[in-house]
Length: 132
Image 1: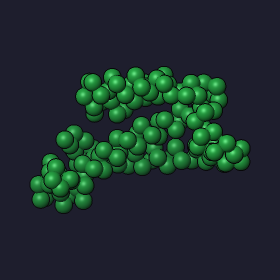
Image 2: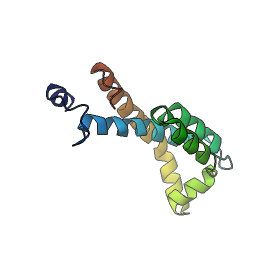
Image 3: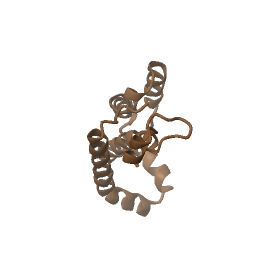
Image 4: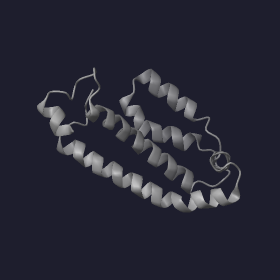
């Protein structure tokens, strides 16, 4: 896809959207989601996730947002609830579902990080990490 879009001068196109640009946006989101899941996994149940999530956003997605949006999202993320609240909502209050999800989380995070690293290397190799 990247080679095709490079050869046909499509990387900077906005109409229709370049597949490489779309994948880059998903790639950036994956970095945040993977980090967020890692924060959830390592936090104690009663710990609020706002500070850690806001800091994570600042290190990841905020780099690609304008100042106003970055500051707004960073502030809103401070309102994140505790790990227990998030996990209960994800598991629907079912203890077995929670235990299953928590057991899977390290592997899910590992796979997400692997996908992120492979995609990062691909975009670095083609020098297209700064697509508009």
